[in-house]
Image (cartoon, rainbow, N blue to C red; front, side, top):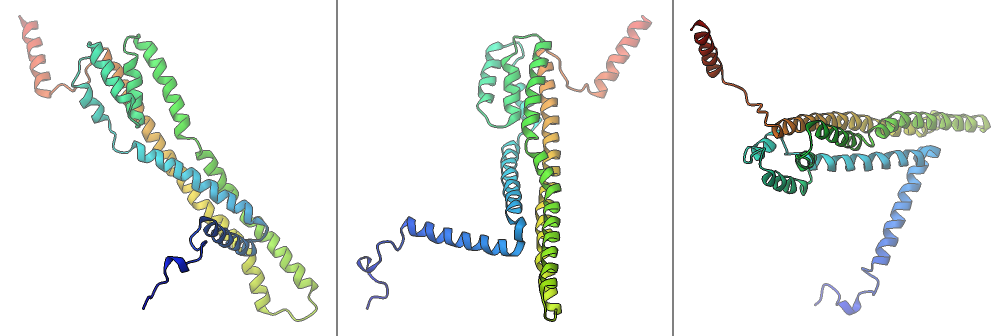
Amino acid sequence: MEIYPSRREWPKNAFSSKSSRSIFFGLTMQQLLELQNQLGLMTWPLILCSAVTVMIVIERLIQVALSIGVGKSAIRRQLSTISPTNSQQIEQLAQALSNKRPLLYRGVAMLLAHHDFAKSLREDAAGMWLQEKRHQLHSGLRLLTLIGVISPLLGLLGTVLGLIEMFKGVAASSGNITPNDLAEGLGLAMRTTAAGLLIALPAIASAQLLGLWADRVMSKLEHSLNYVNLWLEGVSLQHVSPGKHISEQNKLQVTAHD
């Protein structure tokens, strides 16, 4: 006794992609129609705001994921293995770092690739590169803030329009108005305000958090590029131990007495 039918008995289009797309499209349109019945005229503007918010947040989170795990100490460890006067080693390190995705590696690679230039020219190149990356890291954040401001206003506008339509229906009604009728109309009108707030809160919070992250990344980039630029000039930023500093002062005092 066969519990499942054989393949010959299956319909030809049982698992076809065309039927799957039609089912998915039908479900999506049905959900959109239900959403439009609940939110009224402000349905599509609110959907557009939510879609743009999701796309920007996902794109920014990808940038965050690519920058995690790269610190200034990693750059210093790699620089400690080569000499600032060895052009071949510097070019090899620049080539190796330029193939990596994190911004910190690419910024250091850019600076190492210009090790033959004067310090002032390297500073100008680093400044232009940092300005470009600052614009990239903050891209979309102003739009997120704008969506956070507009979405509640769109929701409030939908609420006002819904109340107007409700009172029009009440005025045109010749029978008794029950509390259930008013509650249904008010509930329909207030949904747009709730939807606008649900879009605005994640948009504003994401814009602020991503802005703080972008500022932190830029601070790390500026510090690392300054460190590399001084390293190329042969300047060491290692701290002198207190004991050594005291012994040097004693030597100077003895020399002065002599």
